[in-house]
Amino acid sequence: MPNTAFRVAVIGAGETGTPLLRQLLAAPFVTLLGVADLDNDAPGMRIARHRDIPTTTDFMELARLGESVDILIDVTGAPKVREALRQHMQDSGNHHTVIMHETIAQLMLSLSKGELVRFKHDTSDY
Image (cartoon, rainbow, N blue to C red; front, side, top):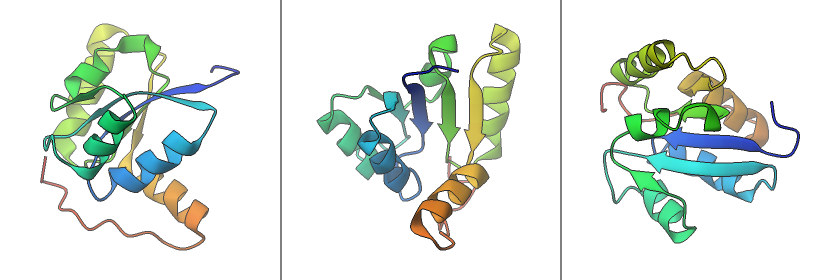
């Protein structure tokens, strides 16, 4: 794990990913490597582009960044995204990148807010 900054990429830039993205961008110890969402006009995608963070509508582009990513945050809630990421990590031999799923993101956002944060999207949206 790096001593100076966490290198992070986020998959999902809508209602769930946007508040998380704002917190990541505000943290001086986080380097955001990219953001993915199927909707190129999702709020988090616009924020990322405004901050010159690479964006993509193909979440696998972020997975293909390989071991340059410390934490790959998946807030889509979509089982097929979760499985594709796991399979890619296994196939590529990437033992460095940690995949952080939506439940952990919900916990972290809830802790920072001091109350339970509920996500409203359907887990089959992606």
